[in-house]
Amino acid sequence: MESINYQNFRIEAENICVDYNGKVALYDANLRLKPGQICGLVGMNGAGKTTFFNALTGFVNISKGKIRINGESLRSAQKDQTIAYVPQSEGIDSQFPINVWDVVMMGRYGSMNIFRCPRESDVQAVKDAIERVDLTDHLSTPIGNLSGGQRKRTFLARAIAQRASILLLDEPFAGVDIRTEKLISELFIQFKNEGKTILLSTHDMIHVREFCDLVLLINKTVVAYGETSEVFTPENITTTFGGISPDFLFGPES
Amino acid sequence: MELCSFLTLDSFVTDPLTHGFMRKALLMSSLVAAVCGFLSSYLTLKGWALMGDAVSHSVMPGVVVAYALGLPFSLGAFIFGVGSVALIGFIKQKSRVKEDTVIGLVFTGFFALGIVLVSKIKSNIDLHSILFGSPLGISLSDVKQTIFISLLVVILLSIFRKDLMLYCFDPRHAKTVGINVFFLHYLLLTCLSLAAVVGLQSVGIILVVAMLITPGATAYLLTDEFDNMTIISVLSAIISSLIGIYISFWFDLETGGSIVLAQTFIFLFAFLFAPRYGIFKLKKFFAGYK
Image (cartoon, rainbow over all chains, first blue to last red; front, side, top):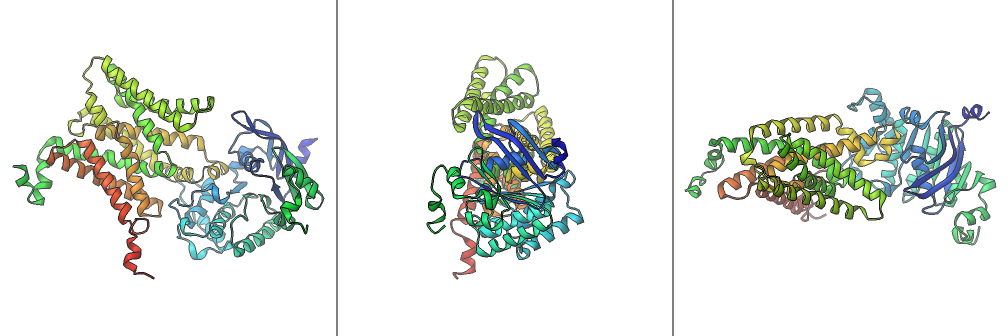
């Protein structure tokens, strides 16, 4: 009965648990996302957001549960370049000696030969991706010389160049300028129309209301999951953030 | 006598070349330096300096046991090098002791075992040449081994150059697009052990870590492009080896120490005068104050 549904879902995570050397980081977490859906992942620091991403990318092994991507195993999703991960700014070494072009080209590595020699189609994909994030003037700029927003766009371009149908974004709006924020939100709408599935973690409640069809509130496990309008209530948010009132989070007017 | 003869730069360079052992030392040390310099870019970017120190010290008992059993010393060194890393990983996972502490205690333990073994196993092992290197007294079989290992490491690094760069930069992305991160991790470790083995002939076990990190650190201050960093790292390593050997020949100094000191001076030069990242940002200086 379950297997019939697999065809309809891009991401299916069922009762997944992750522990690091016996320390539980995430337990009994469930998530189902369809093509064209944007889902916000909301929780405190240490609530397991990054762990959730790590599990979905296969960077950590799940100790229990099941992950299916397009109805298939994570391993074959990796081989098919289905999932792209856009790291949060602190997750990468910004002083690494590499330029914008080479970072975006890394999005093509998985589909290249063993020497990672770019074919013409790879070069084109990288060009297009860089154009979409408006960084054509910075092709050979080292990432260390970019602003936070430009660096964020570089990694977004890498995900675009990868042609992934699932995008996982860790804090895409943290520390970016207004221009980048606007560009990212426009891209989200385009991605949605292209049928891509997006899971993004954020601290900013306003962004959740603005972009996300669905919201997943987590605190080591799923606190609430569903349509943003139904699930994103002050009560649920209070539970997610361990009893801190939503007044404190939103300001008194909300 | 010697002081007179290098009044001309020409004889300073050519006189040592009349000795067979010097030609061999210069060639072999340049090869070893190139290999270590190549790897150095990856180690410094990955933050594996302490790991390099650990592996290079841990090969000591392997070298001693291999010599005693008449096996190629590189084999013994390789087994103990990789073994030390496995042991570090195991202890870290199974105890609450912090990683840098575990690394420190494992490699000193291995190193101590090596020293004890040398004193116990009666053979023609020269402790001094293991500890401090002996590029001037390298034997023919060692030459063959060194060339073989060096070529192996260079080929491996060349094939997986881009994957290793990605692994150092963003292992999570590598994993996400189906690249075998586990393999790359152990590939880098293997190359590290092998490079430590060839490097110790030039400068000895105690200083070989310098060969593995200083050229990369120097290059990191001079460029923002990964490929350039590798080239600069290799060149600075080779130049240091040549300078070190010449200096040690003319002034009768310890060769390994001279090579590493030459590397350190090149690093200090970059540290002070690198166009962009040096203390006296020369680029800005020449561009005038805006």
